[in-house]
Length: 240
Image 1 (spheres, helix red, strand yellow):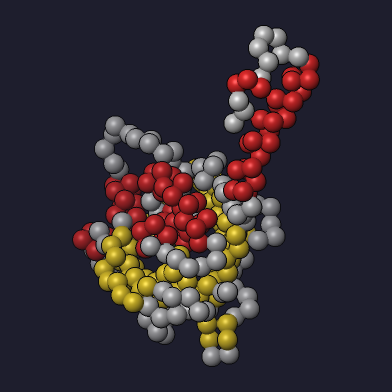
Image 2: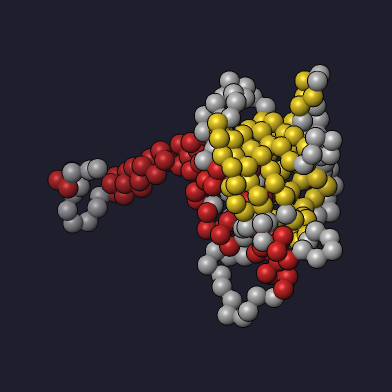
């Protein structure tokens, strides 16, 4: 960056002592500012209806470089990928529960307990169908049908098996997604999802909690999801 002949040899004069740290700070400030400018990203998912969409409820996400904060009908869930913890807190209240996450690369020499094996089965998924989607808010989409927890069906007894983790309940389910890679800010979200990959490998159920984590396996950000039957199911659409 600076030719060697421009830097005096021998003891550095006082002026250079002041100038060099300033130049170093300027060199570092550029990329940090560029990355910081991508965040936070606000994503709002709402239930569609005959009169438009519900103004309240649904799922609101605030995404930044270190965490995703989800507000689901008054329950705030903070997934901190830097501190490796999940925080559950009712909106507007101070009481909260903190759940530690496994560190990337953390392994145990002991055999998995039955509870750990169930969590592993619940965290699995298969993309069982794919095809062209329809345009959502002028965005082209691709359809993906995802089967979560397929291994639980082999362990089922009298009732469907469920698994509790970080205060959430997981079980076997199928979700139909419309995903798009043309959402505004998608490139920054995809890069962020890639940096979180080691944490997801250590805590694979995070894939089902944070829609940003689905970008890599699905090839796009979910802009619509459909789960369950028409009468008892739920549909959420990303708002423009």
